[in-house]
Image (cartoon, rainbow, N blue to C red; front, side):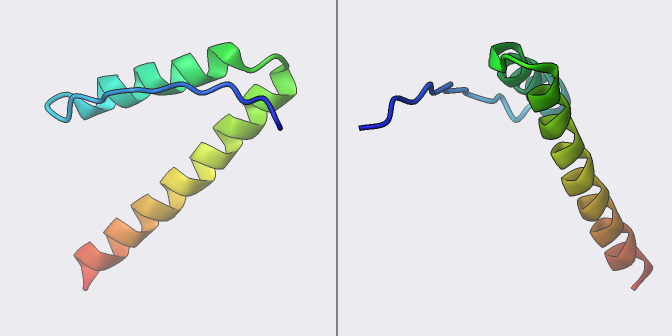
Length: 61
């Protein structure tokens, strides 16, 4: 059996930006190394960049 640490979040979609920011901060707070935190932030940056590009492409169509 592998032990896992889980974080459960409930996000109020009436205020999504603040809620997502708080969730990201909570996740980063439990990661033990700077390298792990940077890896998560870089992955999020990539995902957000792709999502923005998709929305911008859809808007131009």
